[in-house]
Amino acid sequence: MITHATIARRFLSSSLLVLSMLAFGCHHFHAGPVPGAPTDATFITIDGVRMHYTDVGAGPPVVLLHGFGSSLEIWHKVVPELASEHRVIAIDLKGFGWSSRPEGNYSPTEQGRLVLAIMSKLGVAKADIVGHSWGASVSLALALQAPERVNRIALYGAWIYDEQLPPFFLWARAWGVGEFLFSAFYGARMEDQIAHAYYDPSVVSQERLEALEELFSRPGTKAAALTAVRDQRYRKIQKRYKTLPHPTLLLWGKEDRVARLHFGQRLSADIPNARLKVYPRCGHIPMVEAAAASTRDLVDFLQPRDVAMLDSATPLPVQHP
Image (cartoon, rainbow, N blue to C red; front, side, top):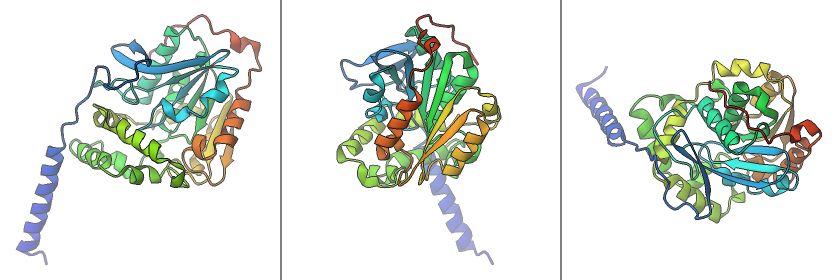
């Protein structure tokens, strides 16, 4: 039997939850330059979005795309290995790193369009595309928009299926609920936030933890991240992965608890010309926990084998979705 006291407690709990949601309901975007950027940082403005990137090395171009809640710095061990034979362009996706965080569309398709526009402005007609986690969904969306502008694809721990979305992300689609959840998430200890991503969290240095705390504190971050979560709708696009003709390498941690290995196996079956490499005792960040092995495999996969791939001087028009 439900008593009046029980009803009162439930009403009070519900009221407190609603008030909490309202209190956290205003996450602000940040359309301008992100304060604190290094003085030597390079930017390109695309449709009013100020995008941060690095561009090093020479040779066939490779574009690196980071994952959710991350930045181009995640590739710091990979870039030097690739740059000996490639032109390496690493990009902070809209809403992350030192790129601006304006209000708007944060879907993988839109992020892919922005990357294609950056390639055009940098004179890159065609490139190898490398993506990690959510950046893998941007990579595939880009390849589906403009397959002629992609040579090969390499994906680390890809986050690319609707079935991968956790309840946290689905709940966040509701106004108020998402704002409340993201305020709580970004207020948690950094050690607790990242532990799930690693097989051995001790590999993350205190310096890296402090850098992530600073990254998460930048203005507009919570609003951009929440919108990026709300714009993750893979149901339609994932049906098209089977149409991708590009040679594809999948690099996966065997103990990945974020993008579990069976999704890598599924993706290797979906993409006709894909092969899967699995690294033991490794979680969601193979470029850190399996740095030597995964980088070696990536470098070997991206070896310049086709003279036609060197023809990247003439930019092609960006194809809009």
